[in-house]
Image 1 (cartoon, rainbow, N blue to C red):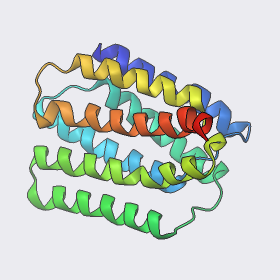
Image 2: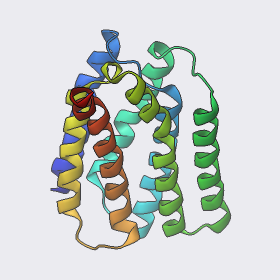
Image 3: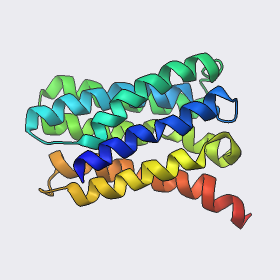
Length: 183
């Protein structure tokens, strides 16, 4: 399930990239920069703890690609209050990790940063759900479900990352797939 989760997570980037290139999706550069950076750091910390995450491996590879596309096609990163709070939260998480040198603390800090970093994307999806690609987010959610089933040891090092990703994907699926039909 771990490998399937990683493959699904990476595959979900295909419709997302196509949607960006066609102009249908306008990704939040701030969210993607935060996600790419902290996911990379979390992957390193998890490997240090011996935790495996196929999902995070796929996420890191795709997040850097989307970060580049977000900077090119997402327009100028708008730094409103929500973006500054997200960026500060991510920076604090990274600083805490660097100060403690503890891999589990790093995993916790990075996942807090991942969730906080999602706020600009949540805000954009709330205001304009059509700006996000529902197929990609549904595939990412399927990846999360696989990742949850792949957890062999339910501790912070192994479970927090898939739980955090699942929370983000559930919120996004609600905002762009379910909520538009409720309004």
